[in-house]
Image (cartoon, rainbow, N blue to C red; front, side, top):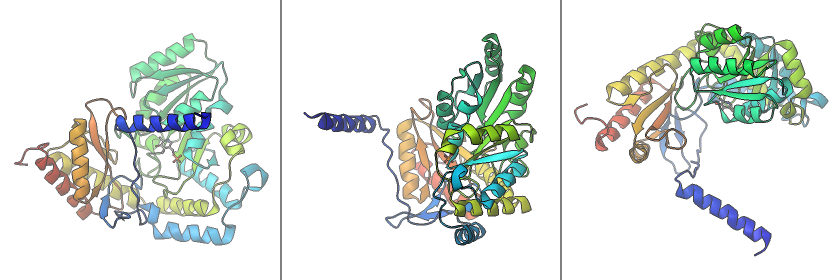
Length: 403
Ligand SMILES: *Cc1c(COP(=O)(O)O)cnc(C)c1O
């Protein structure tokens, strides 16, 4: 066998292994814009309960119009990285607007939040420093940390006693600077990080605090500023990373925001910024319109909070167990992976689009259907969703027939 043929056979057997383990990810083809309802390529119309379209801005007319306008005034693309000839007035404006929105000094845009995290740690921390990371942090944070030379410490998920132990361990190891880093909200459970307590521990041990706000910016907190506002520490986070690809319009693009000099050093040294193309002008224009909407009114985040509270109450009253909390991510706990798979199949037949998660994505025995609320859902969508879950749950014996 040639080495190319051997390689291809190796790849096929890897794929077979993924399939045999039940981990193969298929993709459903959607034939409409994102919204409360989506149509699949095969014509089925489903209530969408699995988009990160928290505020319904992915198809908002004002956002689309602003993107069109930027396309007309600033072109389709920049054909350049930022520091050569890829910085337009609107890129600078968006960076300033994001900093003002999030209570920081300056912002640097990236092609994605994955890049923001990937290019964050290596320029800022050296081998004398320590990074202390929540065990369930996003893959992009893990990868970013891998690329830097700092000593790595990991604390048990959301465990403040262990965080303190790791801060002590970093001190004992003689760390020069310590950076604690956490997701603001965790996507599997909808857990919201205890930033008030983490900030207090960071202050006590002289550590910096960084937060990835991808599942929070735009809707957590009374003005939708994020986890820091929700936990009463707005303006007190040293470094925030975030995405334009979820609540803030859902296209793509990411950012890091914080102190002026930190952002300035990232512009000098952060590799995904230096060596990857400028964010598309239409996305920048759309994002500015998103910030206009969110600064003018809390209507969308209020509707999302209302939908979340209603759905959490209604699905629990229907007899299902959920992970308690306040986040629009609502994990409906089934436990058994086969039952969760059957439920996920049945609700699809009944017109709901939501995803099941099984081991090893979540711990064994904690299989679940994860649904995500959006401001684009009206009450009748959510009533229909609860009714479908209830019918499928009864058919499968997951909830009592009397409920
Ligand atoms: C989605 C997500 C990212 C990646 O965001 P992109 O902008 O799509 O690259 C990073 N971190 C967290 C916590 C996320 O949820």
